[in-house]
Length: 303
Ligand SMILES: C[S@@+](CC[C@H](N)C(=O)[O-])C[C@H]1O[C@@H](n2cnc3c(N)ncnc32)[C@H](O)[C@@H]1O
Image 1 (cartoon, rainbow, N blue to C red):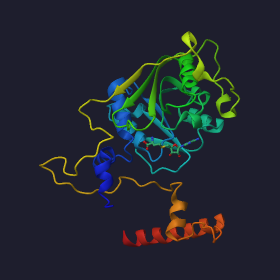
Image 2 (cartoon, rainbow, N blue to C red):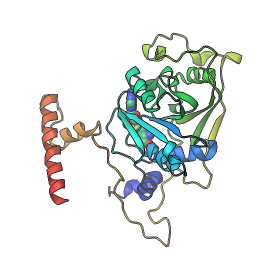
Image 3 (cartoon, helix red, strand yellow):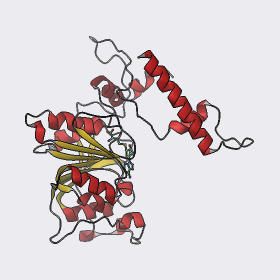
Image 4 (cartoon, rainbow, N blue to C red):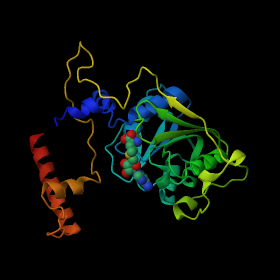
């Protein structure tokens, strides 16, 4: 398969490279903004689960593009390291940890965020964690599967408006969707805390069985202009007869992706097989570091 075949199969992957976005996910946030006007009046934003950083890029371009951009604060958090972006403060940490929440709050100097976006599934985020620093709007990536009813019910306690949305750039074949929560209004006397019963697996009620007024049905909105590209379709490489197709490399490859070790093992034929035991993890990690150092030396000599 040639390197351009992914450009054909995934139009948003290709457009992301052409427009300089680090990942195709940028279009999801842009299309959600077209529908919900997410960035209106926002000067403090948090991007949770941010790497490789295409949503932070969108926030940086949209919020800092305005005239009074000195007031704009954007904090991006991820377990993975991320290449720097203009006007974005990065925290490498686990968003489910109170220490990470405290670090984010410190960056806002006591003020709450106007917008929190999170592109990690809620099973990993937990909900109470984000209450700590939200003031107005929350955008959460979700998988519409088990526990989604519980998630909606919890969100409805904190926001007057909760909508489930599916942008055109999110494949129909995927159960991924986004919950847009607006008008943060927690119950009176509510004190944000980090207790997380979802992660403790202590719920034994099947919330999907709830009926009648006990079940929250949130509006579902397919969003994005119908003339926008369809993420489930394959497009020809020559999209525009006046512009010749040219292959472009990704805008910003990940710094140290979690799959790097697997690729190293495979490239060096070190994957475990039935008759050959797997290499020790430590040995393989040191070899990988050596490989990366050699690669970096080569790159700095050539530049
Ligand atoms: C789908 S990617 C996010 C893509 C990003 N929105 C973009 O536009 O480039 C999900 C990210 O969630 C991060 N992640 C998962 N669990 C996390 C956690 N507990 N704390 C921080 N980051 C987490 C992963 O490291 C991964 O980079």
